[in-house]
Every structure is written in C-alpha cells, then in structure tokens.
Length: 382
Image 1 (tube, rainbow, N blue to C red):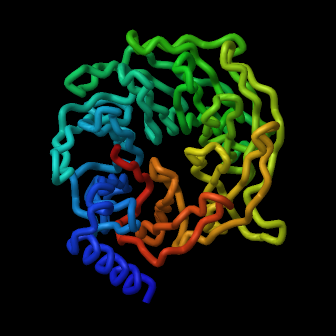
Image 2: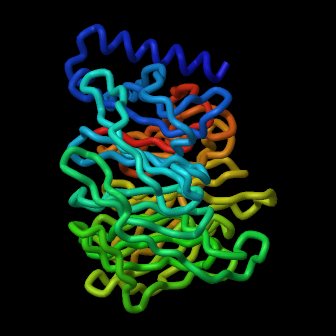
Image 3: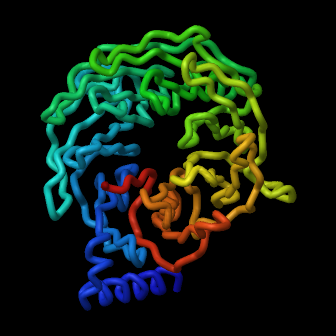
C-alpha cells in the first residue's frame, strides 16, 4: 500500500506538470542515485524531480556500473563523478573513480574515463570548489588520494596518495585506518577526512591546481574513542563543523578556526531517542542551506535525527527523529532550495521524499517515493 500511494502521488504530480503549471516546469531538475549493483540494481539511476510539488519520475538506468556507491556533480552541471567500490581495478589492489558526461535533456551518462582510487573500497569522493581536483577516501585500505580534473571533465592519475596509519580502541572495527569521507573547508584551503578506524579527522593543506595534499599542523583532531567519525558538515558561515559518529550514534560539534583549520569541541549529542535500546549505526549528515538546522541518519532506528542550531554558540537542540519509511538510510540529501529531503533506504530498495518545514526544521511525510535497488547516494543536479 505504501508504494501504491507513492505511485498515485507521482502520477498526480505529473498531471499537474502536463497540465501547464509553469512554476512546476521551471523547477524541474534531475536527481542521480548511486547504488550497490547486483540484484535489482545495474548502476547509476536518474529521476526527474520537480521542486515545486516534490514529484519524482520513475527512475531510469543512466549508466551501467559496478558499485557506484557515492557520487558528486561538477559545478558546471555537465559532468558526474562516481566511486567504484571494488577492491581490484586495472590489475591493482584498488578501487576506481569514474568520470561521466551528462546528456542534456535525458540525463543519461556517457563514460569519459576511469582512474584508480589508489586504495581499496573507495566510499566517498568530492570535488574541490574550483573543480580542479577530485578527492577520494578509500575505506578498505584507509587511504586518500587527489586526482586532477581536466576542463573536458576527464580525470588524470592521482598526484597525491596518502596512506593513514594507526588504530583505536575498538579492535573489532578500529584495528586499522578506515578513511570514510573527504571534503574541503568553505574557503577551499584545506581538505578534511574522517577516519573511522582512528577516531580522528585528518586535515591537509590543499593546492587544487596541483592536486596536492600536505599534512596540516596540527595534522588532525580527535573524536572521543569508539565513536567512529564517518561524515562531517560545515555551517554555511564556516564558523562551526559537525561530525557524525557511526559507532557512537552521535554528533560532535566544533568551532572551526578557518585560517589554521583548528577546532574546539563545543558539544556532543546523541542522534537517538533516550528510550531506544536496539543496535544502531549513524551514516550521513547534512546541513540545511539556511544554516539553522542539521540532520543525521540512523541505521537500525531507521530515522533522520533533526536538530536546530543556535546561531550564537553553534550548539544543537534535538527536534526528534523522523522514520525514513524503509530500512537502513545510508544516505540522504537536501535539495538546493532547502524544501525537500530524499532518504535512500539501502535495505528496502526505496528512496522516500520528505518536505522540510522552513520554520521548525522538522520533516513532513509526503507519501511520495520511488523504488531503486540498494540506493546509497543521491545528488541533485543544479
């Protein structure tokens, strides 16, 4: 009944669109969905999204690919990049990163080229803000790399290859490094990577035109032992950053000193309701474009944790949790206007749409969504 309701809502949205709603027509864009391939999935999927009424078209295969689990979009909207979450590529013990050209109109993808990620199990990638280099985190090997990006969208071989070392308190999951996320700071001067295996966020000085990464001084900051930092999000003002901890089901808030990329811990909060007793791990964290709210996903509780942000202190106040309407929300994404949130439920093969209340920050069920095999990442085209 859940998916029947979603299909009816989708059809209603299309009727409004076909009926000549100019606002809806002008606010149509594409959504790309990364997956774990096999079973119901063959690669990267594309859906047409209407931000006026929140309608999603039935997904179509944009390109066949093996485990394209995380995606990022070039700021010019012409190219899409993906990890290939595998352990062997081109004769190396490495995963892959792929560059695709986007076909105008249909959104279908054409492979431009592929390069080694220079480590096993790549799980996250991001472009620097000038789109001159692509940063990739390899979970399996606990390493990171930076690859140059050409004006034609193609990737060069990695110029920076850095292997993390060490371990942390939980020997079952933190026996060695596990780089899980990498991004640049708001001023594009530093690259920060969360390493779940080390309970650290490592910081590198970034030279995008050279695809160069040099350890900062200090080279990292620590998270409480056994928390397992996974992803992070910056506040739009760049004054605070928030790290979601996979193993500890928590978010750690920090003040961020942008000239030196140093931090001061402000707060740690749970992503779970106080009466929850089951097993849970966190996954994604996303900042609302307004900077007033931040959201994190719970796998086990299968919800999105919602928080308001005090604009003077950066501290978080819980707004509760919203069920994602499926199992294992590995990732979710907020549309650029901050009106909608898409939650990807990996183990129930569905992507569910929620509205965002601009005043309270709380999520609202829409009854809309689509079926996709093992969805694990969504990006909105701009």
